[in-house]
Image (cartoon, rainbow over all chains, first blue to last red; front, top):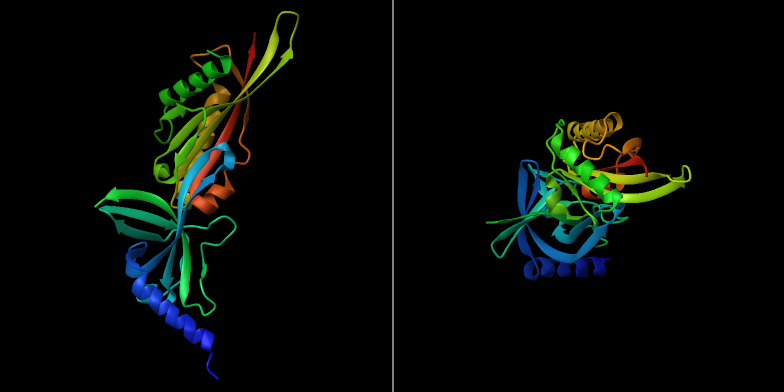
Length: 127
Length: 141
């Protein structure tokens, strides 16, 4: 018997990718791939560790698990990977990093089709 | 100017006049707060931390002035980069441990603490090196 929830999830994932994404460049060292990503939550976080405050812009990206292919190999996000997003004439670079008590990524659905990747802004430059 | 501010200013002046293994530009701040994208460059920040005193005799008190000195930089997490920053922290600690404060010679550095040696949280969550030295200066006045 087919899994209706699985089929529904696949349809929703297709709609998300078709109607609610923008292109970003996912980089690891010299390897890069352009993927379609949905912008997840964006918030500001303050880290008061060691008595010195560091303000951080946090952003989640949702991308297809199957799209994350670097140097011809399917892969999963690693800490330190970077995503470049171009918006309004500026290139924003985000680094894949853990968030609070969470790991740097998790699957966003029960069928492992979509990755939710936690990132933090590390650079903005004009393009 | 408050004595602890004079000492903090003297620490900044001394840091900026000295030569270390990495060039640095120290600054005194009341409320250090940075944006993560700014941390690609080395930040050395001096912040007054605490004052305590005890009576020495009828006319004088023994004052302890604690000054925090933070060394921070975003890193690639390579051992060579982190080792270089650890070495810089040690150089700075040694600099104040062995020498007087040139522009405030009445203050003597009596204690240098570096605990924790670096922030595990900042390394894990920001890939940023953060190490805070606490220098304790003694002044009799």
